[in-house]
Image (cartoon, rainbow, N blue to C red; front, side, top):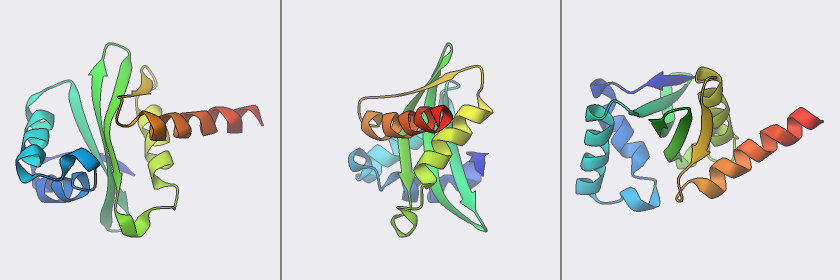
Length: 122
């Protein structure tokens, strides 16, 4: 289940963001969190499974689009389809917007969205 980011989740969010290739440096992580906290069009969601937050997805809202800038799953839970599930849930929560990807997340997000379209056609 996706939950909207709150300041209380800052350390968890930073830990999950650190799995992103461009978010390894502490200063970069702090800047990213600051962007999600201060910019109203930037939204960060954490994915909770059972009692633990094990994934996150960060988007920028632009008119009728949600641009996915960050998507990360705890390495011990990778391969379970959680990234795809987060993208699907994000689309469900924002039915008035189309989910798109930035250059960094495009290969993964497009794969998730294309799988959804193929399953709908089946």
